[in-house]
Amino acid sequence: MKQKTSYFNVILILGLLTAIGPFSIDMYLPAFPAIAKGLNTDVAQVMLTLSSFFIGISAGQLVYGPLLERFGRKKPLYIGLIIYLFASAGCAFTESVNALIAFRFLQALGSCAGLVTSRAMVRDLFEVKENAKIFSSLMLVVAVSPIIAPTVGGYVTAVLGWRYVFASLMVVDMAVLVAVFFLLPESKKPDPSHSLRPMAVIRNFVSIIMHPQFYIYALTGAVAASGLYAYISGSPHLFIEFFGVNEKQYGWIFAIIAVGIITTSQINTWILRRYSSEKIIPVALMVQSVIGIALAGFAFFNGSEFYSTILLIFLYISCQGFVFPNASALTLAAFGHNAGNASALMGAIQMGIGATASAVVSVLQNGTALPMTGVMAFCSLTALSIFMAGRKITLQQPTREELEEEDVEMISGL
Image (cartoon, rainbow, N blue to C red; front, side):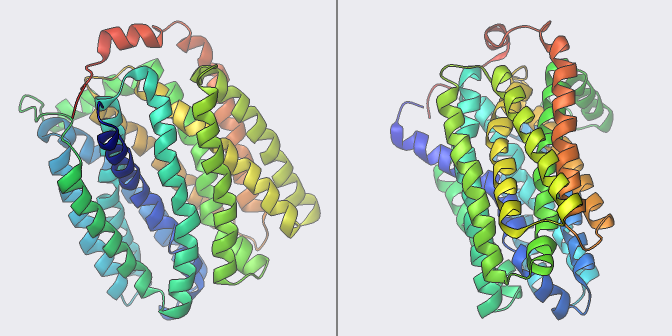
């Protein structure tokens, strides 16, 4: 990354690729009641479109991982972005909630190409010791999504109707596709020797998931992130139906809460100058667990109060800005030669657990804030337990410097 302009372009495009999935989630959240009315169903059924998206984005990453190793990074990415384009059109023109659930699944299959590719390219293009900082930079782009997307989605729904939300996503996808074609370099040459036979792919995934460096940090990051997915799934009901705000107000609340994760992800970059990722993660999870318990406690005993709920959610989500970049960097640190598959498996685990958390919130929905807040508290406590139990194992593994000398193939220029 010798040229500053090239560095900026790459980070921006990788951030946009990572943000396609979250943008696809956040932008249509304010439209839940409008979608339910337009398709003659209820909000609970519309919430299943969110669960189907999580399932699709989880399963799809396992497909793209081997493709990225075999054909390079950009060709599979083009396929994913085109699938996303046509699936978004299907969402815009659908006439039933079941069809919307199916199209959202296909939309997720397309969007996950960006998630897998961006993480793999971070591992391709940058040194191991820089990865946590790069992931923090990507989070700056990604975290803008919860600020812009619900606000824009709320206004689009109010002015034009919910179908135009998906039309807007089509425009975003086409812009990203053009940027990828003209500005994003290929970071890994195709490898014809990489087998796409099912058993070979399975063996590759098994070898990755059995590595302690992978499964401990991947599970820690995934379970912690599932608290965020529980919030995303439950927040439309909490704020629009329980607290009675309108779509535009919900968008602004979502945006305010998202400011926290933007701020902490950038503070994380500064803290990494003095402390390692291994030291940052447990502190962030401890703080998040305390906040999660307080959030669930207020919901259980007091039925939740509007402003205190927003404040506690803000603090809870802010902790994710310290957990995600560091857990992601540590998860991929040992896989310089197999970053595509490792990235795919990490993403599949994260989205799979996230989909489960989202579904649990839907199933437990009882008209209060407790299902969402209870799941959030459970996720942070479980993530902390996984990290603390696995820390003894990772201490016996090679250091990041040893991993770097052994595994990293650095692409020094664009």
